[in-house]
Amino acid sequence: MLEATNLFFNRAADHLELPEDLRTILLTPRRVVRVEIVTESDDGRLLHHLGFRVQHNSVRGPMKGGLRFHPSMDEDHAASLASLMTWKTAVVDIPYGGAKGGSNCDPSKLSNRELYRITTRFVELMKEVVGPTVDIPAPDVNTNAQVMGWIMDEYTKYYGFSPGVVTGKPLDLFGSLGREEATGRGVMYALQEYLQADGRSLSDVSVSIQGFGNVGSNAARLIAEQGGRIVATSDISGGIANEQGIDIPALLEWTAEHGVVAGFPGAEPIDGADVLTFKADVLIPAALEDALTADNAAEVQAEVVVEAANAPTTPDAHDILHRRGITVIPDILANAGGVTVSYFEWSQNIQQFRWELDRVNQELERVMRRAYGSVADLARDTGLDLRTAAF
Ligand code: NAD
Image (cartoon, helix red, strand yellow):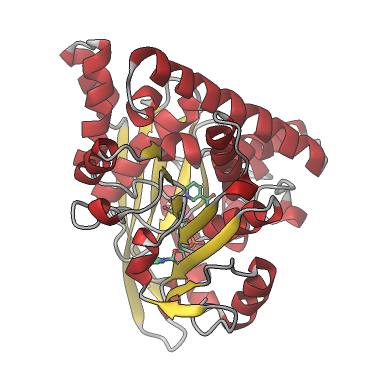
């Protein structure tokens, strides 16, 4: 995975004719930390997990990036995602560097108390290398506002009141209005900008979305509210489709009750993998990395892929899509809404001043549209694809 991120970086570096020494500095993480997390299960066994934090670059400000709890989490994943965070914060021009981390634990197999113990032990082991002006974690796959609240609470035990150590916190614990939906909202703005270039709007398109977690479900809801037709979606339980458009508020009620999209009565069940090649104008991968590969990129039917997930497209798949004339709005632009509102949350924490929701959304919209415009202008002027232009 790191190899793919570095390959995309090097394409931009080739275009810029960056010298080798500078490339080496920009590709090498500043610090890589791996810890052993030993905790107790509810029935008294010892649980053994690994924790990672890769701090990629801090030239533009404190390092920033999500925490992922997933069995696939390892140093390579963290390094790749940390590097993407450096470029992402630069693309939207917020004063941060990049980092990423997490644990290889599987929350679906843990009780809430077990997850709490793993999280707080992680903080205890990492507390010297994170902090409000050093490295500020945020939610990612399988972590949420509650986990962020635990992190703030644990860090505060050692260093005193420090809400700025982590973002994506619950509203009652110094979180920001609008953070939960920010990544999905940013995805919507990026897609709107793409469509506006030839006079279209969201109500003109059908959309297929892989992944119905935080990012996928919020993108679905917001796009549907603007008239977009969500024709297929999926999660770990499989896929569902309805060519007339899935009733997203009803699906959100269903998933709130049942946890997964499978069984939703307002759509037909389909194979989860088919969501990626479903007939729709827009494809939004919003699950995990490597969703689009050399095996399925030739079958994609959409005219545009909006990368809500991080690194969902392998370099081979990117090249196939490019040759086929399919536009890819890259992760470091498309999903930057989350880190942007994390920055707003951190700013509010430091100033001890809460913004109204309207202000959060207006500022997010301004940042996303400006970033999209600058990347699209550069791509147009240079003939580069959007990903290389963004890098
Ligand atoms: P999440 O844990 O809330 O949701 C992940 C979703 O993907 C779930 O619905 C899960 O069932 C589904 N999924 C997992 N494997 C799948 C598969 N093989 N097929 C179909 N669905 C599958 O995570 P999230 O926060 O929504 O993150 C999703 C992606 O967005 C990740 O790549 C993450 O790095 C990226 N991202 C998240 C944020 C954020 O603010 N949360 C910000 C930027 C980027």
